[in-house]
Image (tube, rainbow, N blue to C red; front, side):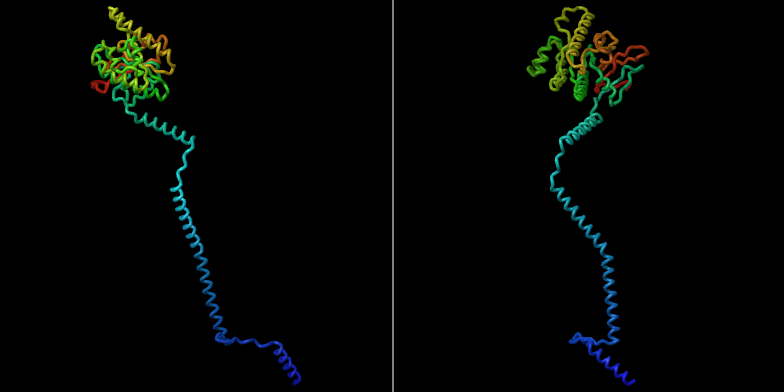
Length: 357
């Protein structure tokens, strides 16, 4: 028993000799290892761990918000940079094809605006082809212009016994409107005037070419009343300045002086005008338009009468001729089966409307 105790003691001493004792920390940081100290260290370690975990959790929760804020600030900075770049960079010029498309669209818009907002003639137009009283046409007059544009020859019948200066105002306005519409369709317009005898065509051509002025041309119309030149001068100047060809279609004075009877003079006048009109039609394009200014008695009842349109209808379809009477003194009531006096009755804005307005 005692031997065994000694043996155990020897083993313990030999074991302790082989395993050196742990070093104790020295200096001011040396700590005493005791159960109480160990418990305190464990509590402190747990508190620090919880603090670290809480800090990590806050960072984890704040990370998406910080990322979103950073992305927002980056997008704002990029947008501001792009805006500055766009303001500084010059706008690129459109290509030729793009410019042509834009020009076409602008042309359509201008045309549309012109049709919708174009100042119409401040006058009254009546459809004389209806049964009963002539029917007043609305302010647009679109149907009237469509019919006029579909014709080759448009007759403007003016007052004869008592010439009316308002007729010349209407003639100028109608010629202007038809000329502008034909220009859009690339059609040429000519104006034939009975007031100028056919033997003055050379002088008219010189006036159109500006080789002579209005005063020189006026000297060839000494047979006119003094006020007539002043009435026709605006129409003549407009035709010269806008390329509307003037055609003299009246009978020469020396021929009229040899005719005694009025009926014979009338026949000669209508024959002379019809020949001049057919010559102008045959010499031009089939799309050209000819406006004829003559006395109302020469065009009344149109192609169904006995005047110039009836003579022309033998070589030109009836639908290609339109007759307009300017400021007629009376409106006839058309009955069933009767021939209309004209296609349209056109009154100047200066004329008061007393009936059927």
